[in-house]
Length: 189
Image (tube, rainbow, N blue to C red):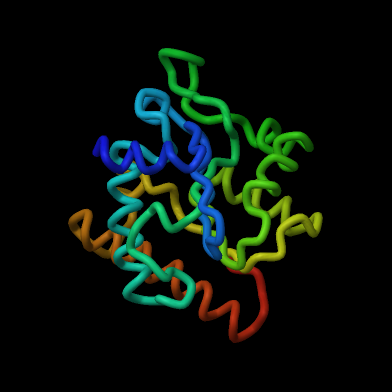
């Protein structure tokens, strides 16, 4: 994984944000945690492994919105830039009120600027992205999905293993974009 980490760091990647100049699509997660702090880029460890699986699936389902199966071809950011994990901060996620602070939303809007497609992963990411859309700070089409942590993926019903659950997650996201294109409404998880 060090090769991928080196490539990501070369693009001014931080623990909470992986920029990708020219990207049309991005993902918003909740916040960086212990593994992101250790590795220096967003969505490390299990969440990153599930993101890699999801990208392959989404690329196969909708190559227009997801033109690559590789994470380096997407903006990846977090609704909250601060590292959170119990041994460090006593918690694993920020509050919704923290995520919705105007300074934080301005940061997130800047990180998502120019994207046409955004996937929000997890409750706090959903709230932040909805706030940006409501304020007019985000014009991208949006889909909302569960966080890609293994714990969250394991709660998906309809499949008995991780590959099956990842396929369900990806199909739901792709379907939200199809529904949005048909009726112009916001997608709902």
